[in-house]
Amino acid sequence: MLRVVGVIVVLVIYVYGLVDVIRTDGRSTRGLSKPAWLVVVVFLPVLGAILWFIFGRPYAARKAPKTLSHPTAPDDDPEFLRNLEARRRNKAEAERLKKLKDELDAKERKLKGETGVEGSDGITS
Image: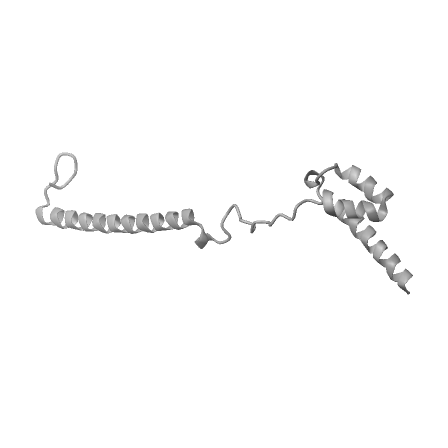
């Protein structure tokens, strides 16, 4: 029974070390290159895996939370909100100018109707 447990422990260490070497990015290994670590783990099963865990495995770097390069929703984008406010102001200004122009046109028509005099360019003065 103790032999079986020992064999299973050795097998688990070997397989876990081998899989860990294979899944690790080659640029982040320490000590040797990734192919060299594969050779060490394959030819020295338990010792190679232990050496990998001690000397070759990359340091566990905390991964920073993923930041998106763009906002996830339009209301999270300050540029969009600025543009939205500018468009709202421009629309309000255009409506105000249209209203003023309509009032001016109405006054001109009223004056034209009262005086009935046109200038040389066809504009009522």
